Amino acid sequence: MGSRPTAFWARLPGATRGIVLMLLSTLGFSFMHALIRHVSAELHPIQIAFFRNFFGLVVFLPWFLRLGLAPLRTRRLKLHALRAVLNVTAMFAFFSALSLTPIAQVTALAFTAPIFAALLAMVLLGEVFRLRRWAAIACGFAGALVILRPGLVPLDAGSLLTLGSALLWGLTLIVIKLLGRSESSLTITSYMNILLTLLSFVPALIVWRTPDAQALLWLLLIGVLGTLAQLAVAQALKEAEATVVLPFDFCKLIWVSALGYLLFGEVPDLFVWAGGILIFAGATAIAYRESRLARARARTAAGADPRGR
Image (cartoon, rainbow, N blue to C red; front, side):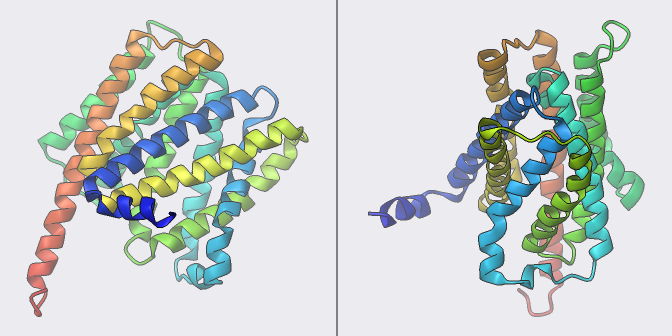
């Protein structure tokens, strides 16, 4: 009986599997964000971040038990450490934003991370930008201005923290790109889970408040949902082209808007929706361009192979 769902899944086209996995990841992240907002009424966001990392690491224990220390073999420990420091700082800022600002607004502004990454790639990696990518970047930042409306409404701390976390996450994406040149995805993910747990432990002790049984259950769900959603995104990008699955990431804004309304009475205004659409359009255009360039590089490398492979 158990093999039937597996066989059915295997018969589905790769694009369909990728879309399903991406949709599942958006649900996982959306419920995780809602739970962070809920638990932040009782616990400090930094402590929540530690538990998210700790329980996320627990999810990876079966891989370590099966593979031993093989995933930890690396010659780029300093780069892994830099990625972890950037990642944990971005996480602290993002979780704090979720405790302060409506989750739909935080989610919409968080879509700016790939746009920051594109700008940083130009500055740090010397990548050349043409008109289309500049237009996508301008579209993304215009969306952020629509949401924030500086000069018309006061800038709130949660929105600024979200943009700060997006900038740091954009820098993290650059480091991941550098690591990906020599490291496997399993090694990158393994170091991420271990180092983030260690780096968030001491700050969590400073603000520590022992959670009750119910809060501990929510924290466990935050860690499990976050890790499973990350794995779903990674697998979705393996199953199908990024240009096929990434547009469905916008569903996060739909899910968190529904959860924000049902759980916290938050209703995102028209500016959040309009700005979110502009930001996401810019980020998707950049992802589409990156995907086309990656395919072109792969074809060039294949053509240069003297064996003709």
